[in-house]
Length: 89
Image 1 (cartoon, one colour):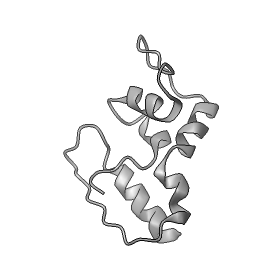
Image 2 (image 1 turned 180 degrees about the vertical axis):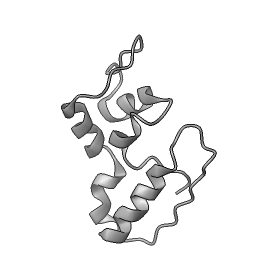
Image 3 (image 1 turned 30 degrees about the horizontal axis):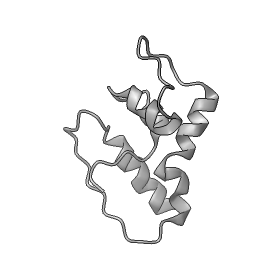
Image 4 (image 1 turned 180 degrees about the horizontal axis):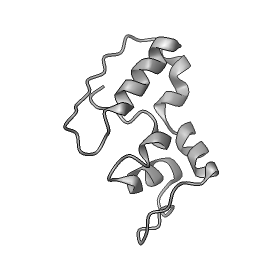
């Protein structure tokens, strides 16, 4: 995986494309394009459920994660979080 989005719930407040997080996890029409608001607890739950990290216990294959510090969209913390989750599962 190259700079993967692994946890939409943690990415939504640390990226310059929060709209992508809402659309990806909640569907089209769920983001207010006029103003950003923090996600509600229900929205965070849905974002978590739509994230690869929520299914970490199902990973069986060896996984290579390439993290790019210059990526403007996906924070490097996404790959690091997934790495640590894989190591602990």
